[in-house]
Image (cartoon, rainbow, N blue to C red; front, top):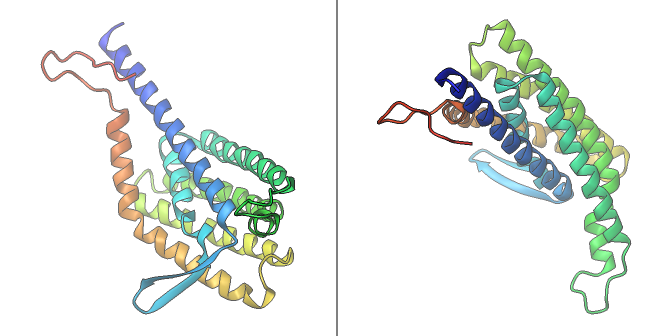
Length: 239
C-alpha cells in the first residue's frame, strides 16, 4: 500500500471512529433528557434573570451541537441516521421503563410503586411528545445547517451553527411543550412561562457554546488527519 492510499485509509477510519463517538453521545444525551424532563429547577446563571426550566432541557443545546458536528464533517444522510438511531434507543428505553413500572415493588423497597410511577409513569406519554418534537427539529437543524454552509460557501462557521440551532430549538421547544401541556403533563397556566424560560435558556446556551463548537471542530480535524512519524516520515497505525 502506497503512502497516499495509507493516508486515505487512515483518514477513513478516523472519520468512522469519530462518527460512532458522536452518535453514542447524542443517543446518551437524548435518553437522559427524556428520562428527567419532569423535574423543574431554578437555574441562576445570569445576574439579572433566573431560568425556570426542566432539567431535561439543560443539555438540549449540546444535542443540536452534536448533530451540527456530524453535518459539518459527514453529510445529511449520516446526520439523519444518527437522529433515527437515537430515537430507536429511546424507544427501547421507553419499553424497558414501562415494563419496570408494571412490576410490583417489595415491601422493603426504598422506592415504592407510587414514587416510581410518579417519576417514570408518564415517561411513555412524554416520550411520544418529546421524540416527535425532537425528530422534526433535528431534521430542520440539519437541513438549515447544510443550506447555510452551501450558501456561505463553507465560511462563517458560527452563523450556520447558531442560525440553524436557534430556529430548530424554537420549533422543538414550542412543539414539545405544547404537546406535553395538551397531555396534561405540564400545567396550562404555566405554558408561556415554560416556553419563554426554556427557549431563552437554550438560545443563551447555544451562543455560549460557540467557542466550544469551534474547539471541537478543530479537535476533530486534528483527530481525522493522517499522522506521520516525526523521524522517518512513515505512517503511524491509529486504527
